[in-house]
Image 1 (cartoon, rainbow, N blue to C red):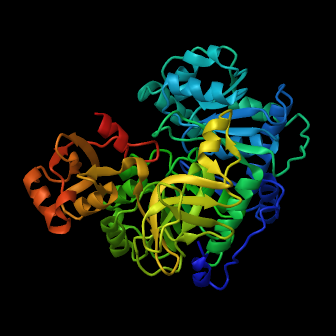
Image 2: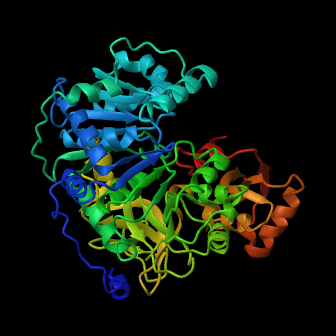
Image 3: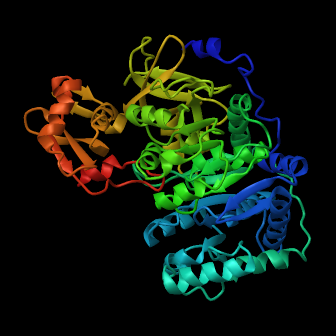
Length: 551
């Protein structure tokens, strides 16, 4: 399709980027170290480190890795929540020329074994709270080096002692584990300070990340993201954001886990490039604690998913925060619902922008311009050097305004899935990546996600998109969260079932169905409503409709 969106780009945003401007992520990191050495890079649990300190710590760790038998290209896993140890480990792996394998700390033993064996991981940095899971499967993997850290390891000596004692002996969240050959994270850094570090030659074709898909639509697959892929996506997004960002002066709130591609790219790497600090939130599920932490710092940017923004808006104390410095909030990972976005703007005085991406695209594909004055329900326009077309089930491009599956082409599209040529060939055809998402495009080049192709509900031959039902349900003042799924029906094929977490026990299924009937045509109206205390979610808060369907 014609790139009509280019006509509506901000005058300062280029239509094309140079994906080879930097040879690797390490180049970007080293330039930021040189330029912003005295600036704060990360803040967590009251502790902050500068870019110069991050440089020293990651350099020492890289030296330790190089001298421990690992070689360039080896896969090294990180399994931890948002702690300062994460960027230290991340940049030392990259600086050693090795490949980062991000692991969800909440994985079961089965899930962890699959990811470690599939990626042929040779070493892992892990928080001891999750070491018991690793000890169950390590003998079935190629892991030879285990580096253990505790939550408080990067804090001051006194606070470190208290924090680690509380976690281990009072809260008792460190189950027993058996990893006799494990090394201490801090010991490795200390040893590395006495070893020589040789900066390897890293090219754009070298693998930077094996980023595993969530597995919500099948087996978890390792997306091979090269340095060139990541650099390209950094260039694409930073060229848009730098028109409102003041380099070296912003503070971004990072509540989404850094092991997820959204926070990894949108927060960790982007704001390192800008020379700005990340406020790392270790446990965002503790909403009162999250709000209390935000109150301590003059934050200017925050990213999240719809459930996180919704949760904040429903947490006492959030509306009392100082939003005067906030420049924008960015939502992704799942659809932002209009009631949440409108309430966000009402409370904070700032628009909740929405973007779209997927692991296989590093992840950003589209984003709304930060100058947007109000939520418009769009995922925005394609970032520079990105092409999109919408196709029907036969692969033919649809007419303007019609819905079709979104295909993406650009330098941020992954190299492929590790050891899965057939899955790669099915996903990428002639350079076009099939997203599995159904979208429309308006005459200004703004795209709108209709829904996931696999989540579609078919009622008497009519397509019903869960996002639309969920957004209408969320308009009701007593609905906290909602998910719409299809349930088999002998007459209509499927009916719409709505699963809801309510704010008030007084809300009945009849009242909610009546509310939906006011805003939806007949075949879209839920025929059943089920109330739950909590909806199943992924590690970043995306509601898992598949689990509800299976149930």
